[in-house]
Amino acid sequence: MISYRYFHNDNFHHLLLLDGIPSKTTTKKLSQPQLQYLTVIKSAKQFTAPQPRNSELPAPVLGGPVASTSKENREVTRTETPLEKEYTETILNLLLEVREQNRQILSAVRGQVSSVVDAPPLPVELPVQTEEELGYLCDYISYKENADALAKFLATVGGTSLVNKINNVLKRCLSNNVARNYNFRGMREGKRAFQGLPLKEVVIRAVKLGHPDATDSDIENYIKVWLKHAPSRYKQHLIKQCVE
Image 1 (cartoon, helix red, strand yellow):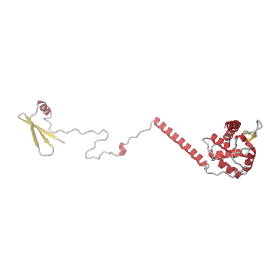
Image 2 (tube, rainbow, N blue to C red):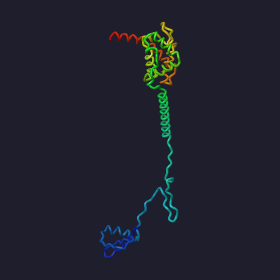
Image 3 (cartoon, rainbow, N blue to C red):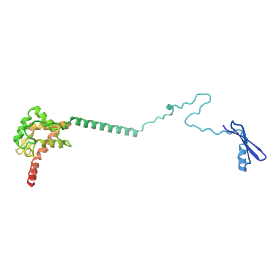
């Protein structure tokens, strides 16, 4: 606390600073405004600067316990708004969907067969070019172990989608020259039934190794479409050979 003492003598006015050190008087002739200001504080023996207020914490009581300033007293509880709650739930649902998609992708990858699977010792070279070769192939895969081996080998055939995978597997097994003589049920135009061949089961099994979620019905429908367009593909092949 800083205190001032005022006195005057012969038009000289003095301010005596008392701050705990030996008193020192400074003499100075003051102007009229300064005289007016000093007149206001003339009768005051002490002047104390006002202490700053703290609107958040109570003033401590002298001689009493110190007001608590712990972290718990300063924490402010905030309630989540309905909009924030809805936004949080939306984000959580999206994360759950992404996790489920990742799980399905991982399951599909684990179900794929390694591309280093060697071809089984087939009696004919694929794709078969004649009905006779197809007969040899069907006799070979009539044994379960041979059918399993061929399915694993065909599963290594690439494909960017389910339909692309099925088309590539069929193309690997049958030439268009042979496929044009078949449809799925064999009930029209004197064509043979592909569904009666053991090769159909091998194709379905090979596709499912890479696409475990695919159904037999989905695969069979794509087989029907591929067989349906076999005659046009064969004609295009002949035209291409003539041009070359």
